[in-house]
Image: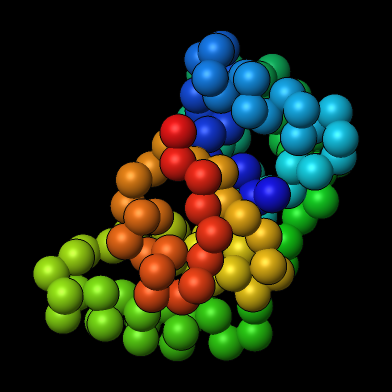
Length: 127
């Protein structure tokens, strides 16, 4: 399962729901990350020590690589969603396409994934 930035942030803040969902994934080695997610979360660290700790911990997780030619696909998907009246963030689209190609479910707090998921056949868990 690919843990999105929003879920990691809630987890790191001690949000009970996030902890209850992510702890078992970590215990079972089922939590994955992408370099983009790691960059989003670590860049928000309040101290160098926390930045270094998060970088080390995230490096130990399975990391999904960006699919081939992901950026033209992101452009096409963003264009398509915009024609339906939904503006999306490039990072969310990159995460979604990476997860879909790797056949991973995304666990997230970000409701924007609810509009992205049907367009690409992505499984999501929003909490």
